[in-house]
Image 1: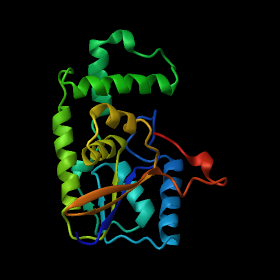
Image 2: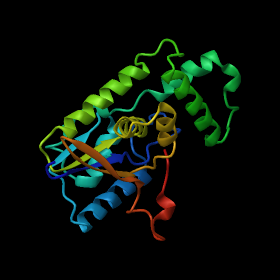
Image 3: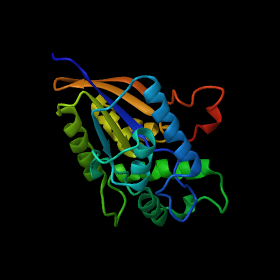
Length: 222
């Protein structure tokens, strides 16, 4: 077995939940990504490859972490699934499960969890991407990292794609991937050692740049 390379798989910073355009960072999200960049530099962690999904919130997060994205690779295999479409398809079939107006966000998370389970069981109709296609593109994106020659890789993605990557890597079931998805924090770091023969999860959902008295109020899940 050869020496191990490292993947830092990061969920995007807080996006603009509830706004007309979710796919951009909030002011807090920009702060989170800058703090993660500060943490990496202070820890002497430098990347020889940067990959992001093809979503605005991915690119803005990566820019906040490393600054210059001119050499970054854009891979839409790391894009999030269309959770709005999945929820709409589920509520079309189960309108009685729709949260009431101004319901707490936790009610929507419960609907999302049920919708994802139905999606993974091929029970939803009229979606542009089915669960197996989602799994397949994430697997292909991860394979490009794990079979590459770079030694320290940063990937900025989304909670669903990260959860599926971990599910595939650890041999877990879909239910566990869905549970992972709903607890992954903004700018959380999933640290993986890998070579062509092995992948090993070293740290899950860590926010070392926020996990202190000064910044703990900046921890978010959206």
